[in-house]
Image 1 (cartoon, rainbow, N blue to C red):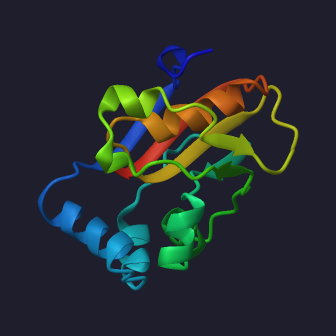
Image 2: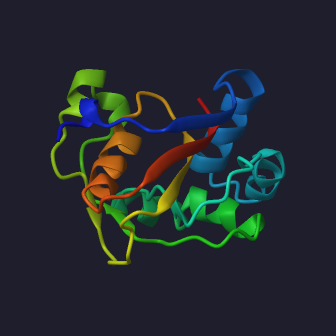
Image 3: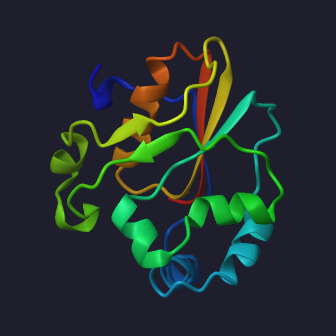
Length: 158
């Protein structure tokens, strides 16, 4: 199953990745301004649907070391939303250095690190930003192998 054949049932994004939203996310992620997690959490609106499992998109291991925190998990923690931390990302070249085609063709960038029953479950993947969709689609490919019933995506910005 290629990444381009993965289809989410729905992709929700709270804001456009421009202006103040872009500046806020960059300050949060790259300047490590963790206080912004609470602000982002307040403005991140979750869909009304009920999901069996909420899964944060992981950061790469090198980004976790540099940042010392996972931006998405911080936001979920501030919102007091229970999630399953079941995905792990392998180290790979930085996304901003790759073309969209190169991003989509990265192999084995995501793995399931913790097995839980996902068959016939509705899943909400959560990330801070959706640009090309490469990371989201790599995560979705791993989850589709588990025969999920529904897979939606929520991002703060797109």
